[in-house]
Image (cartoon, rainbow, N blue to C red; front, side):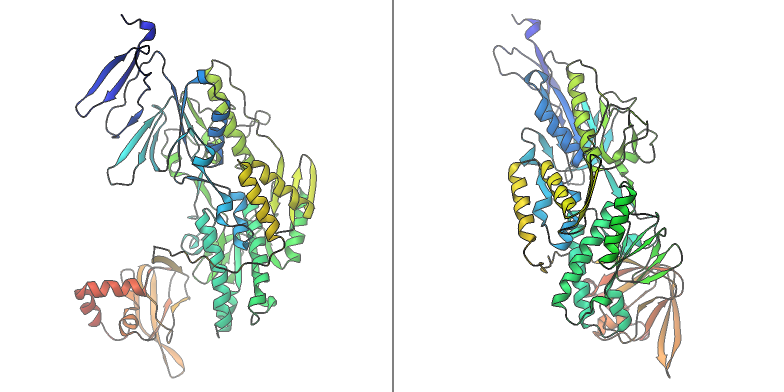
Length: 577
């Protein structure tokens, strides 16, 4: 006879129904609760176990989520009976603090990407998109890639660590034209773009266009803005040795920030040192003025200044993750309100950490800032408090370790304030690198990073671009009133569809420009030059602020070749457009 003390019940889903099995652990393998539902619309199993394992579900593979998983692995005991699952869009942890060095070539992509399966042995990992989060029932729905292929995960404890997103909607034109700095692909594309601008400027004969190609604007003077501007500036100026036709005096790099100082979390003394260093290296600083809008060929600042450029780098516009917006809770300035223990009030077993969490400082009561060290501390403390709950112990408030703050501006220059000590120059550079090395998860990673840093300290700059193709060739663009979208006589390369605004078509006649016609939303232009493989027959200029969809030549050609009716309709259009 089976004793109740040795009973374990688990439901196994079958195509028709769920069947209850009674298993005697003394005579069979100990069952594990099934908590993976193959279909999102199937009701969750109601599992009641005498020896039920606890399930921890971590949503997000950034610094906070990974730190939570590592702490659980490090401190769990066999008696805790924990099953840990982590969901991440990518199967790597990205070290954002090191990514600006990709721009200058000091580091390569593999140095800032840490495979999750390498550092989280024993954790079940899903590299999938999170479709929805149900904090009340502690479940999440994941997309497996198909139109209706979903999977639902349930848990006893949920850690929400999905982070923030880039939101440039407050700045007209930035979404269409800014070089973003969120992903590893963004930084590789930025490096390629810098090289592309030098190449284009070296051969153009138009002085105005040459100035645009050699002018670079960085929006934001926080950590990312200062580091990216400094690394890009060092890279561009060192690269001029390979472009003798470009004078260093032609190169302009401008950093813009609405605040009146750089690096707001640093002391005034170190911030002043950074300003002095950046200006000494040729970087222009426009503080107290922000970006108002951008077009394909210019940036307009809040004071009305217009900077002609083909390159604007956005390190501003941090927004709330759309998943967080769907949660049934009133957000605190775009973040999930938490108690000092990283728990979300009202949702039993739910924790929030990292950029998407507003965890109050027990001392001041104000939420901790969105910084790497804070993400580390919150992730680790949430893990400790989960283990405390499992063991029936009281939780402890979050006190992120304050090792200090560091910023690397070049190979040999940095700033650091560590435990009350302020450093700048090469000593700060060494301290900054030592701090990054100390947080690398394995000795192999630390050694590889250290050896690469040592090598790049003596080797010349690498000008090799990484020509990664971009699949999206239908590009939204925005032009301000008075800007020329195409010019008469130019070589044709793109087809344009007007989505908003009004443009004017003009031709050169007797030394002047004669208006031909006006086009509005829903009209298009550029097809005749592409069909005839010839230069533009007219100039098209924006009358009002105008948005267009721009289609590359190869895609336009593919369309008309496979749609004969479209080709015939375009051929019948008037010869001047």
